[in-house]
Length: 181
Image (cartoon, rainbow, N blue to C red; front, side):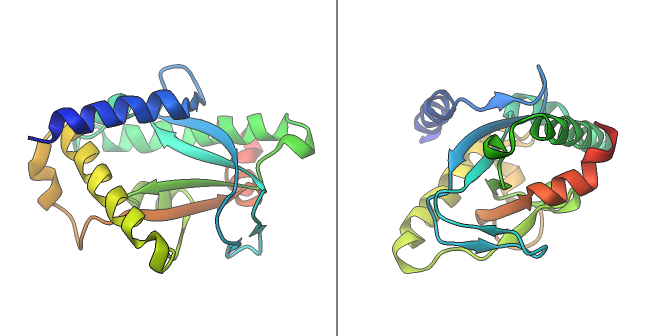
């Protein structure tokens, strides 16, 4: 019933945000933006202050879908790690003033991001709760649209499907993936 609305919202969102693919036909897109939220302190000591340059990470759902089956999952992880190596090289080649201090993502499926080094940062409080619920609803709709199992995918996994904020510092990206750039 709401699927056409979600499809339209996703198309508008993608057109508005315009993430730049890390590589043509790849999983990961990046969009540079200024951090507008509260100060974030990551486990490695990186402090992300309001106004800091960050890379917003977006996944291309069409590509993710190709890797969504059990027999292709390892290929998806390998492709994602390779793109993180490319991203580290891209960042290293930029002038220091033009490098993101960290990379952020919002998702309801955080397992891949955690496996490659992203860390969860607690959700904001009171005023942003409504926005958080809307993000949950929207991201569940995106998952149901793109998962090979459709809406059945929403019943898999552990716990509720809630949007989480994930961060990876530029230093951690370089430490993990920069050696081969």
